[in-house]
Length: 425
Ligand code: GDP
Image (cartoon, rainbow, N blue to C red; front, top):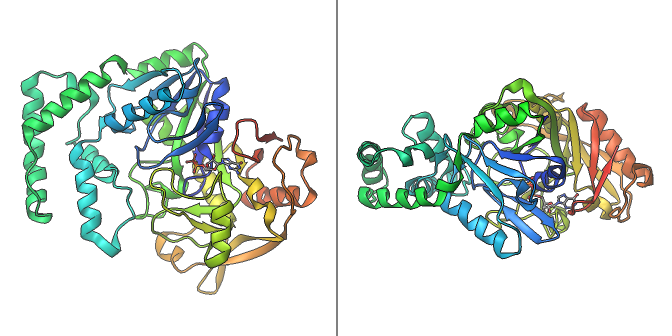
């Protein structure tokens, strides 16, 4: 059976922990989109890890981890991550890299950096991982697939030269930077080839056979619904689809095989980068939630930058769950809210005096003011609780209120960062 784990909001919902937990029953974990621009934080018996490119199944010996064709593959980052986990006692993971995955080229990172600098105050808040230039090139058909590393030398050199012709115009004329060293780039690609060679496979075929053999496959999404380039808060989005539906494409499997879609919703909101964030809070209130949030505070797993904080947003989450095709909601980081006397929840958007519970397009979203409902807090530590009935009444009321507002079943509640901090309903 194929399951997908995806985010309902802006990312950082705790997908890493949920994937690590659900991976226990999986044979295969697949990353199907995105690149090293976002990270999952996983806490397990080996320690605390921030994974950016490796699938979250790497901590289990029995799992085959796949970097799917939809991923922006940064080869040095991938191998540094492998080095990092193996140096901390994790066994070398079983890893397959799609022969159709495309590679983040060194110049993608340069372009990302130069463009953010050029935009200055109007920048997108990119992590400068080269993701937007990478996907632009993929769809402009000037990207490089892993399979091309194995082409004849003159074929690859000719393509490098053709692509550099385009890149150099922008480098020289728009950014005032020197041209790309084509021989140097070829040598770098040959280093990449040596690194990936043992892992490259036709992963779509591998997955097709695995599905036929009845294996359990987990598709692991990065970021969340609101960062999807089609359905999110465009243009403050990421450059690849964050939706479960794209799992079929980014892994190369039939869409009808995805039977379960677990959408992760955090019990409060956080976001990174620019863009409308209706339930955002500021000042001391935000600082306190940021400091207490997640596991050791709400700071970017990739960049370390402080996240923007807000109350739970039912409008955004209802939409985020719908657009994912949610079958199950995993409601996470609930333990963090135990310090609050009262917990505001955003239940509607007031746009020019009209209240809606349907998530609007970006222009209207920018005008939206939150309609808040205040729920009583439970004022205690709920970590360690394993049965739903054992949660304080106000805590259950909070969960059930949100479940009703978003309209999708909350079947799992996460009340701590570890694998076993989970309550099934
Ligand atoms: P992801 O990208 O969706 O995996 O999100 P992050 O890596 O930002 O995860 C959010 C943070 O919350 C990480 O530090 C996790 O260890 C932590 N975390 C996940 N679930 C829980 C939870 O239920 N309670 C607490 N306190 N922390 C959690």
